[in-house]
Amino acid sequence: MSTATFNSICFNQGYLRKGEVKISKVKNRNQRVKFYVGGASVLSTKCMQSSEKNKKEVRIGLLGASGYTGAEIVRLLANHPYFGITLMTADRKAGQSMGSVFPHLITQDLPTMVSVKDADFSSVDAVFCCLPHGTTQDIIKGLPRHLKIVDLSADFRLRDIAEYEEWYGQPHSASDLQKEAVYGLTEISREDVKNARLVANPGCYPTSIQLPLVPLIKAKLIEHRNIIIDSKSGVSGAGRGAKEANLYSEIAEGIYSYGVTKHRHVPEIEQGLSDAAQSKINVSFTPHLMPMIRGMQSTIYVEMSQGVTMEDLYQQLRKSYEDEEFVKLLDKGVVPRTHNVRGSNYCFMNVFPDRIPGRAIIISVIDNLVKGASGQALQNLNIMLGYPENTGLLYQPLFP
Ligand SMILES: NC(=O)C1=CN([C@@H]2O[C@H](COP(=O)(O)OP(=O)(O)OC[C@H]3O[C@@H](n4cnc5c(N)ncnc54)[C@H](OP(=O)(O)O)[C@@H]3O)[C@@H](O)[C@H]2O)C=CC1
Ligand SMILES: CC(=O)N[C@@H](CCC(=O)OP(=O)(O)O)C(=O)O
Image (tube, rainbow, N blue to C red):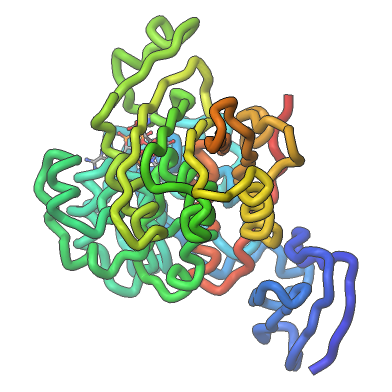
């Protein structure tokens, strides 16, 4: 083994962070190599020469390519050196090219979209499933077992099938597959994601809520009662098939709450928080639709545990995320804004004192289509296939 120290190391894109890098057993350029960055994370990639830059090693199937999250996967994969899209499906838009449905993607060399029933998966290694819930479980249970799958829908997120049936108002037809699924909130369940065949990618609201709350709950810094969550989403969260209530004339110049007291993300949020607490947690959660295209903010009101200070909350979040690439605690007093993360895979957060003694206010922001959907899905597939998890995800936020 040889050891080298780099300020940064660049393989096609800037993958590895500043720190000590130990390189082991490099025999030839095609051999897998392990990188130990600053001793904190172990990454694996392939040593590539620049002449191989455009050769994609992993054949990706994209189910539901003609929707918002499908289009976002295409945008992210445009800069992915290892994943190439070889199969794309659509429903009403089957038979069309991506460039005709989404002209902003016309520069990409992509296959014509086919109907799922006509899809041939024999030359596909992994799929992103960007389909509506309900439809998804029926399609995934028919897929060949050799495929790695990241499912962006809600169908495999809830461990309790009865709870799924209650909140989604329909029977679950693939409960065996649910048992196999790993819930892919990457920063919390990275180790399980590594060995998963089927990852249930979290919902956008649950991502923005669990990332700040899980470390605080695990460290017993906040009370389990009286957690109040007020979330706001951009309209793209409802997908491209959204109907009347999402028309410009009904969204612009106003906001509205929906799913009050009974939004289907409640059991997903409570499942994650209860796992962290190792006891049942119930939350008050109200989502709002905002007159913006993408972006999501969760404002969370919590009660600190006896003797805990604001500084304790801040330091716990700092410690939990200081080595994370995509989750950032902002400087003290800086309020996260959806504009800060637009188009990127980041989650930014901060914590503030409430005027009521003993309470705190946490604010987190994500882009619903990136960290809230396609970006986290790509982060997960990178991990499942042994690539550096930031591959293809280094887009900086679009600001202003
Ligand atoms: N939008 C967001 O911010 C987030 C979305 N998600 C989840 O990701 C999934 C995809 O969301 P999104 O991209 O927004 O949805 P869209 O409505 O924009 O796209 C849905 C896609 O599924 C296809 N489709 C619809 N019905 C069927 C069917 N019966 N059989 C086969 N294909 C079908 C559509 O094809 P066609 O266009 O041809 O009709 C389209 O490609 C959903 O489960 C959603 O809840 C998760 C997190 C965030
Ligand atoms: C604005 C809007 O309508 N948002 C969607 C959530 C988007 C998302 O994360 O949905 P999944 O659970 O299906 O993945 C909603 O409230 O149902």
